Image (cartoon, rainbow, N blue to C red):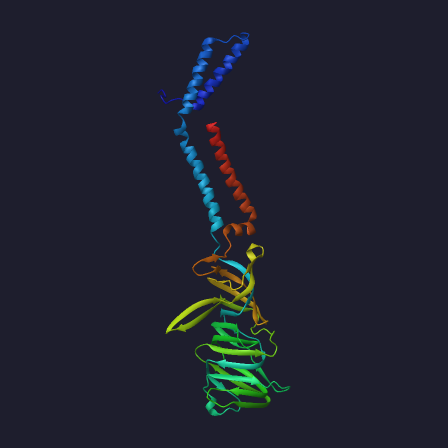
Length: 375
């Protein structure tokens, strides 16, 4: 059966090339004489090839759309890698703060043994003091102060133990060298050993003086809510917390509530003074933080390696994995999580290079084929 479909432009071009070669051979053979009929036939065929080329754009539309689709796909992929962030990343924090809140991931020792100049406690269910009258039991607050004279007195706070899920807040107070440690979820009573001359203040009780020639125990039973301990250490640079605390949440904001005209106004205040975030999965890249920059986490799990108290500020070292790390206001947060492009560049540079090379090769190949068909 005969094929009545129109000849393709490339087949007409091949016929024209063949006729031109034959015409050239004939001219050379005849010593420069151009056969008129062959020349006219080649000229008509050349016009037909040109006409066929002018009518061919609908045939090349699909090729153009394929090129546009390939370019759009590559652009979308690069945009996704640049804008999409990883879900979780490993970081280290070196921060200077005025307040720190966290949740214990497991039952563990919360603090180190501390030698104190004064110890204040509130939120208690009971306070048992050596030599105190029976009416002192059931006191919810107590303040112990060691005599400052040489050999006057000492207060030794035993290590605190927090239950799994205990909520802990550590912050600086207005009193010089004083820290407030608030814990909801203590796993045992607070024990302090006092010796020498100690002044004890209890609610609605006259001031008491404890003279202990040998260490005497003070037992402070925690109440159902937060237990607040105001600590003034003899050596302020000693860390108030035990090292390597396993935590499941971390917060660097303080919630202030102010009552005005019978209405409460609540605001969140950043406790950050300065610091840096180190991205371990980006070859240790450092991000410096500004004073009062609100640093927040959707989730944070890891360990507080150390907390030091210096110049009225807390210096915190944290290592762990975080999600949803952001800074700035709640209305206009700045996402600090690494993008997938940054992660690939730091962890899979060869795969990123090959992917970019193949994408570029595909785009250039498509452009080359389109140019050849339109040349």
